[in-house]
Amino acid sequence: MNLYTYASPANFYHLAGKLIPWFAWSAGLLTIWGLYISFFLAPTDFQQSEAYRIIFIHVPAAWMSMFIYLVMAFWGAIGLAFNTRLSFMMARALAPTGALFTFIALWTGALWGKPMWGAWWVWDARLTSELILLFLYVGIIALWAAIDDVRRGDRAGSLLTLIGAINVPIIYFSVKWWNTLHQGASISLTKAPSMAAIMLQGMLVMAIAAWLYTIAVALVRVRRIILERERHTDWVKAILEAK
Amino acid sequence: MEWASWSEFWHMAGYGLYVWGSYAVTLAVILIEVILLKRADSDTRRRLKRMQQWEEQ
Image (cartoon, rainbow over all chains, first blue to last red; front, side, top):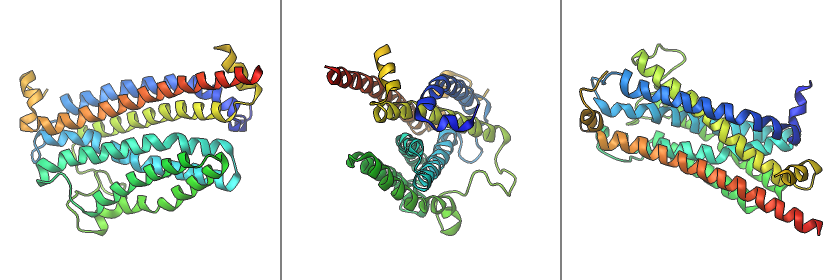
């Protein structure tokens, strides 16, 4: 079997259909495990008491908001470079979930900021650049929706995604580059983690669950986009008739 | 186990509003995404099928 087989929308449609339940179920099970760690195994924090438990969604959501954007930019770049149809469809399928996680990161951040800093919102570098990320997602989705010509829309949206990608390192390094109220990175590749192992484990389990969830919903969405765009082909006609 | 009782669990040492406000809204927006996704999926299939039947006539 040739791997490039799955670059064809027809084959990918069927493969995605088989994979979705696996991703969805493992996301659900890992979420349950992650929540159990978050509320029943992780101890009370000596500085922040129980308020810190927001970390188990805040940090994974913030990671996802940036990772999804980079993956979108990756697919957009591949599409622009090689004109591969499926790459653009993948980029479109990821955007709404990226916006969702950005919103969750901002919302949980506000609810964490209020008891710890005394403010729901401050215009500091980390928060502002994450808000810009939300506007980028919304702008890209709106641009895609506004251009009827699919091929032109794909290119314009992907170009905007690539230009906006400069914002991702700004978000990530903002806590180093500027003086900010926001605490530094929770996990660093160069330093030993500064938090209890069980807290770290909870965060990682929730992050993996968020990944699996994202893959599952993006695959559902990409299947819909494939049907829409390939509606004049015989294989889509056969699928629609079968139901 | 950190909690002596359920009421202590829901109270979250006084941070209940913030902690549960975070988890509840996260759950809500994820449910909304899943519901909208399912609806959009069946809408698209129905619409494409209608278009196809119309084209065949």
